[in-house]
Image 1: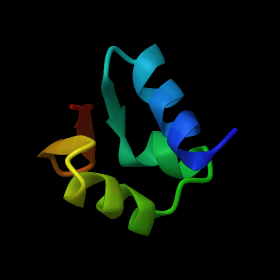
Image 2 (image 1 turned 90 degrees about the vertical axis):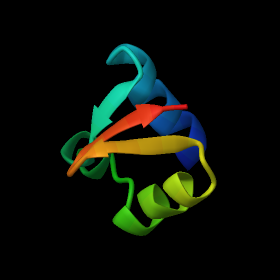
Image 3 (image 1 turned 180 degrees about the horizontal axis):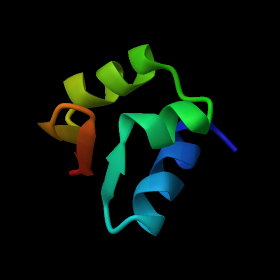
Image 4 (image 1 turned 135 degrees about the horizontal axis):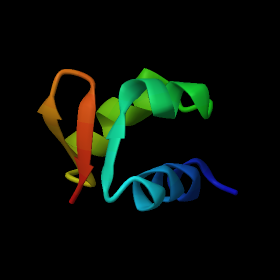
Length: 53
């Protein structure tokens, strides 16, 4: 499973919302989270909480 697919699955099981902690626990690095935000794949709702676009 690719990093993208893993992140997508995390969001899917949580109604398109995920926390930084959930992603870190799954092995997703913060730099990849930042890359997803910059690419408009996810958006930051508030500190440590993201929504799938």
